[in-house]
Amino acid sequence: MDRRAPQRGGTVEVRKLVTTCENGDCPTLYATDRDTLLVQGGVPADHGLAIPAHESLVEVPMELIRKAIRDQLI
Image 1 (spheres, rainbow, N blue to C red):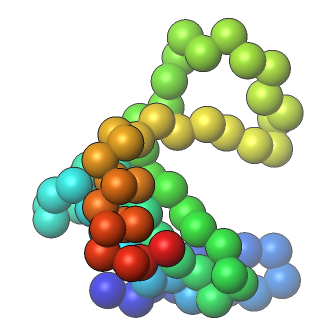
Image 2: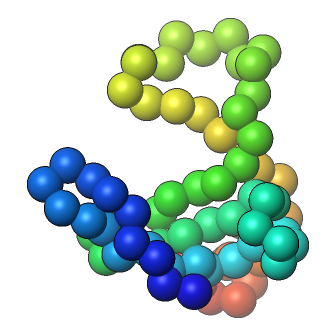
């Protein structure tokens, strides 16, 4: 699945690597054409960290990362 996501100054190409389900509302790992990763996951409210306003945290199950490594996607 390829998608285009808006970014400053243009678009970034996004490709789904691995997910925990196929209906689109589960933790998912994406690769971009900028040699970066995008992570879809839940937003934790109780982390206690000072995160800059231009950044955010998401929480994903370790199995998502293990699966991506096992399948040699990252």
